Each structure stands twice: as C-alpha cells, then as structure tokens.
Length: 197
Length: 214
Image (cartoon, rainbow over all chains, first blue to last red; front, side):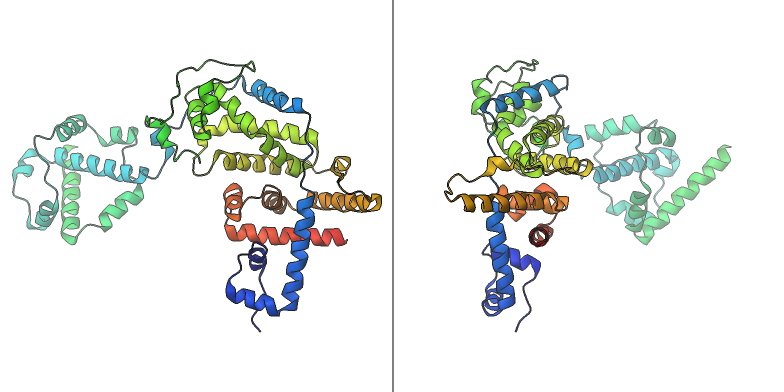
C-alpha cells in the first residue's frame, strides 16, 4: 500500500484536486478516507456558521462617515515616483556611475603627454576592447565638461563613488592585461602624488 | 483587476477612462461622488485618488466596506470590534494606497490590509468572554425547537473554537471557508506560500476538531 495522504493532499482532496495516483490510495485506505470524511464534515459545519448578521442599514453610511472624518486631516498620498518605485535598477546605475567617474578620472588625471604616448603593449587589449567614444557626441561632451573638475572627494560627496562590491566585481572581470594596465596607472598616480608633495 | 504597476502612475501613463484628474479639493461632507468616479473601476479610482481626488476614496470605501466589515466580523465575532476594525482598515488603506502594487485586485489588497489589522488586534486583545452574538445566528428555517437549540449550540461552539485558533490558522480558515478565497489568493494576502496556506488550513481544521471534542 502506498503512503497515507499528507496534510496538503487532504486539502487538495477537499478541493477535488487530488492527483489520480493519490486518489487510488484514498479509495483503498480506510484511515485516509475516514480522516477526509471528518474534515469535509467539519468544513460543512464551519461554513454553516459563516453568516454575518447584517448591521443596521444606516451603519454603512455611518462607517463611511467615520472613515472620512478619520482621514480628513491626512494628506492624499502621492504616487511613488518611478525612480523610487523599484530598486532593481539601482545596482546597474551604481555600476554605470562608477564606470563614468572612473573613466573621467583616469582620462583627466593622466598627464597630456602620457595620453598621447602610444600605450604599452599590456594595455593594448584594454584599449582595443573599449567601445569608441565619438568626439561629437553631445552627451559625452556634456559629461566630460561636468566631470572635468570633479575630485574624488566631490564625487564621494554626491554619492558617486563605487561600492566596494562593484569595484571588486569590475576588477575580477578584467583580463590580465587590463589588470596590469590598471596597476600601472595606479602606481603612476601614486608616484605623481608623492612628487607633487 | 488592479493597476499593473505603480510606475505606470508616476511616469505619466494616460488612463483609458475619462477622468478629470485635477480636483484636489478637500471633501468632508457626504455628497454623492461624481458620475465619472461612480463609473470608474477600482483601478481608475486608485489613479484618481493618487491624483488628488479624495472623493475617489469615498467610492472605494463604499464599494468594499461590506466585504471588509464581514472579514473583520469573522475575525472578532462582534459588531463593535468589527466596526472599529473596518474603520481602521480603511484608514490604513488611505495612508498606504500609494503602495498598492496592482499585482492583485484592490479587494485582495484590502483583505491583506484587513487581515494584518485583525491579526494586530488579536495580538493585543484576547477575547475575555464569548464574543459571539449567538442570538443573531439562529437558523429560523429549522422548525424543530430541539434541533434549533442543538444547531445553535454547535454553531456557537464552532465560533468559540475558531476564536481560539492561532492567528495565522484563523486567518487561513476565515479566508478559505468564509471568504471563499483560493489558496493562491490567501497566499498573496498572507504573504506566504501556497503550501504553507494548505498546511495552515489542515492544522486549523485539526485543531478545531480537537477543540470541539474537548
């Protein structure tokens, strides 16, 4: 004999939604049959007690009035703005913001004479893989101008700094050559910082 | 059904119905709602309310007050508490309607608000005495006096036993048996899985059986 019905299967049986193989068990199992019969009978009894006595016909308007009075001083809630309605896009925005800020920091903090120099072999893949940025793109021009004087502290002040996880993820996705280039840029930046002082 | 998502409200999505959306006047009196609201569906009413029309909420209350009251009554078993709870449900709904996701009907959402309000009430106030207005439940169709008494006693015993069920089991039983909601709808209202709803229902019936036997 197959196993007895489980609790959820009893509820399915009450709803007439028990699978055929379990119905076969139910047909042959007196224990499950008795349990199901008891549950069905109890449900019938419970259902019979479900009538809610009608309140006075005046009650409904009275209830509406009470609700109206209780909410009259409440401001009507404004709909949730679309940028607050869903947080699902926020990680993408954070990564995009990190990418933009990092790009401009790298570009504008690299001395012009080094920008013109042919990149090292190690960075060739990085540059080749990067999407080309059209010079005449007004959006890029706007962002470049807006971010040209942006310092790290300022970026942090307006919450444009990358999250730790986002930076880690970005670094993990780099190729060895890209990492090498990143290390070179960081060292170069550190060296320049120490000579500035 | 309800609004597809809240973002539709905020991004300027234009509804198909013809509503004047700019009438944010305060309205305390019980004047009849405008015809456009009376004809609007629940989705339209929510949109109109969030656009500043308080009278749209009056129509929402008018449409759903009976169901909300009955739900509350089945939880608490008496008119006074059910009346207070129903008011509380609508006040909560007023304040929280902007969080209505529209993934279910407004009625289901109100049930959810109602069940939460009822569960909160049960958490702070246990029934001190038998809360059932038994006298109003006598089945007048039964002519045999003895049978009338026996049925009345059985019904009263069941109502008392239901009041003693753990809150989640009581909520599941009320929504399934009295409100005749599907397991899926109950799962949405209670914020649980369908499997948990079925298990809760089974245990509710089992506990009810034990309580009645004792």
